[in-house]
Length: 149
Image (cartoon, rainbow, N blue to C red):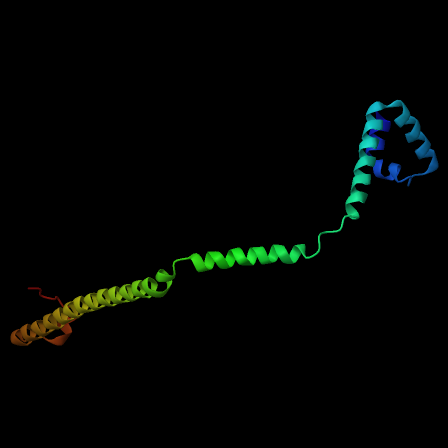
């Protein structure tokens, strides 16, 4: 069991024969006796062989250029097939309508504020006329009460 664990930890070094000779002999003896470890070493060797074969495969010439051209042509088709009418006519029209609406709302809010402000100035005039009619000194009008109609 302990030899199995040790072999699993050093399988690459064992296959590459990069271990001390005593350890290699011990692993050789264990692989001959243990079917599980023998299968694992065989699988590991087959993976290494497959990796070496894959290194020698050359990609097809101009494969990268063809793939990139295909991607670019698909992107161009999507961009040209999008709604040109919306981009040229509807979008600026919608923006213009939005700006006009915002300006209208601003004018209405501003005119309401002007009316409220003029109402306060009328209240001040009424207060001043009442104060002068009653001969109330200015120091007594610190807390002005506004009359509303």
